[in-house]
Length: 312
Image 1 (cartoon, rainbow, N blue to C red):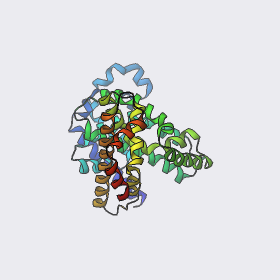
Image 2 (cartoon, rainbow, N blue to C red):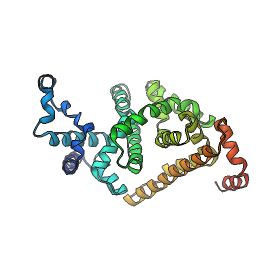
Image 3 (tube, rainbow, N blue to C red):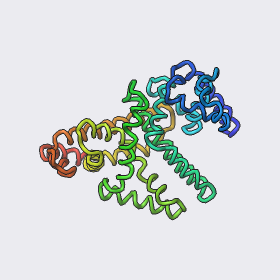
């Protein structure tokens, strides 16, 4: 579509989402009410900040600001796709988007990429931005499926630190071949003018889709986050889940139904990895290493694992 056509759709998408949010209780949530001062110039906030929450158009301003934020960052079809595919309401999608944005530190990731304008090729910058957008959508989907009515502040605070820990540990906790492949991606990006920290975040970004499950299993099993993450990535290699995920990523999505079918398979693989990890962690001895936990699990299932390996 042409830019003017997309501009019209952008305006309609924002207006539609704003109307949907006004029909919900989202503009009354304290988490979103803190956005309201950003609408006004600093001198107004300094002089009349205590009056801003009583503004007669408070709800309309919050709904408009939030709609602009979501669609500007995730695109025209983000909310409509997720409501259609998950059966949720627009307000639910927006709430989970905000949780995902805060938990993943997406704003910092976007800012670091946007600071490279003029120093790297536009198509490369678009690829980097798209990677962050994808991560935010993936984590939004997880929260849509798992949090229910959990308060936003609680969800954000309980996951943000653990998510950061996983992000920083990824270059150290994956299998050797896995780390080698991603190190090559980092090196290629650096040669194209990408700062190494940005290149490293991009190269390991896809694995962060597992972070919410890793964090939750860490709470359930009382295991350290890095321990659980190591098990997640070891079993991905041993059971061929990594290979399957890579093949699914290459499937063409020629229509809405193809995209939904691919999304369903991706969600099945995410659930499979989590289920396997939970079994391994449950059966592991308290003092077992992640590698030892995997070996213990496979020791009683050698024939089944052999069949799976031949099948894969």
